[in-house]
Length: 107
Image (tube, rainbow, N blue to C red; front, side, top):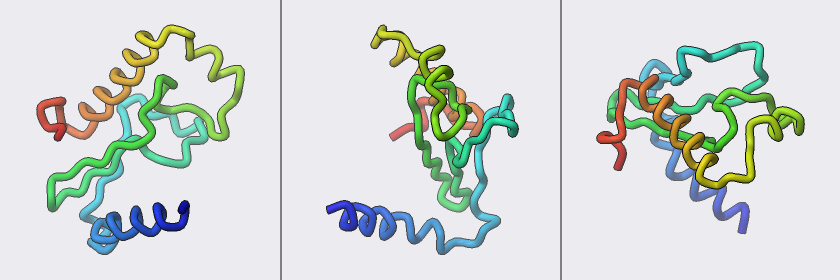
């Protein structure tokens, strides 16, 4: 099953990867700290189609070490679901802003 999901994801993503490299823009927040081991970006913008792909939105800070460090995770997460949703949405809003987008652009 996992291979079917992976194959489907790659099929959907193939047109993006097939485009020229200068057509993609990696999006980072203005406060991006390169000293944090973050093996991915919060978003990638496809310029020709004006598409923005967001990924990895959680209640943790957008930039945090990978693999996760338990002490850091515990410091940022509470048992308050409402607070975690707020933190998640704040990170998404920051990513949209860094890409020059807003919630009105989300479909």
